Image (cartoon, rainbow, N blue to C red):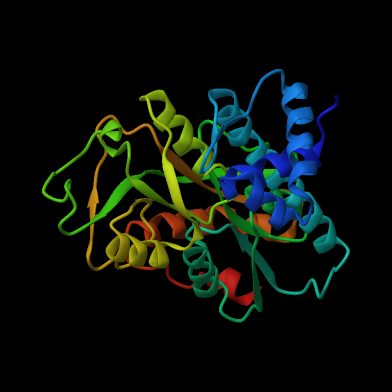
Length: 310
């Protein structure tokens, strides 16, 4: 049997639902039909993906491997569709067009460019993934953008796109006051086995890199809350006792204690990208320098007379 995208979506639905019956209800098909389909999919992968239990299903080692990579493939396909629609909806190209992904410090980019070019109109587009942003930059739909790159899921930068690193950030784990690890100054990743995790709304490899890092120390993170922003993640950490991974984002997180991870295996790189052939490419040195100053909390860049007048 040849495995295609719809089969991966079925596997992901079952994994998220935790049972065949709940997944069948979500997919709006008969439970017997879904069971038969899962067997054919497992045959295509060469082994069982799920262990059937009285209260649902549990992923096998092969199943965890498939789910981790299937999620990335499905998200990339979704981004392809979104980007295609964006490119067919070309609007007014005047002014400076900025972009970013969830979790990136896009507001810093907006502030830097606004201070440099206060008289120039701006638009900002936040896309689900770095791949979607890069395609818009390559096509000339965005002038500058910030994307996020994780070491185990590197981005593919088109030849038309300029690239300059801004900063590398290490993940820290957030726990609530009173958590068993709240008194520690730092923790081992393996000490978080068995905890419930809050999963951020990131579609550029964050969860995959976290999962792989946890697997490398002997456990699969038990993810209970999905697709949330940092402030909502902090609320869930405080109210449920779950843990969450955070990156420096300039957010105040009252009631959440941030703990460095010993031998931290999870980090990300914030990258400035631009279209090499676009008119805005001449500003890249000033934008990059301004981002570094803004990120590290130094005095904001002054208005550049030549750029402000252009």
